[in-house]
Amino acid sequence: MKVLALAAVVIAGCATGTAMTSNPDPGFDHLERAIQKIDDGEKRCVDDITMRTSPEFAQMAGAPDASSDPRMRRQVDEDNRAIRTCQDHADRLREQMTSDERAAYQAREQEGRDRNSLMMILTASRPN
Image 1 (cartoon, rainbow, N blue to C red):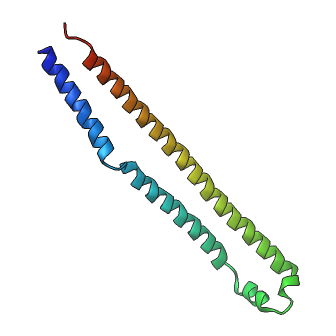
Image 2: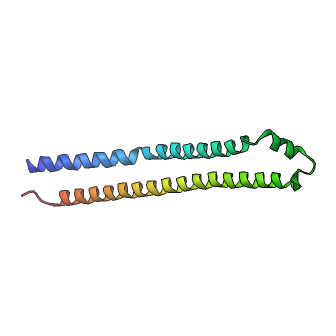
């Protein structure tokens, strides 16, 4: 009876290990979608900054001496700072997501190693 129970555990463990190695990581699709969402948010943020330019600013930009106008330079500097803020925020989100995914991957790998060790112990031990 113990032998049958041990065999069932071994078969279940092997089936789980095979299923995990034969299919690509389902978390990878989730990661790609999340990164795409961050990229879309960054693009929206940058687009919002560039689109909010007032009609007066557009007229100033068309003037021949626009590059020397202090209001124009100040507006361009503010827009550039805001765009950098969008990019920095997106970069932080990507870094956090990468860190979280790395930790989850390492945990799954450790779980697999632990499961394999248990299987080795169970198959090596003799039933009493």
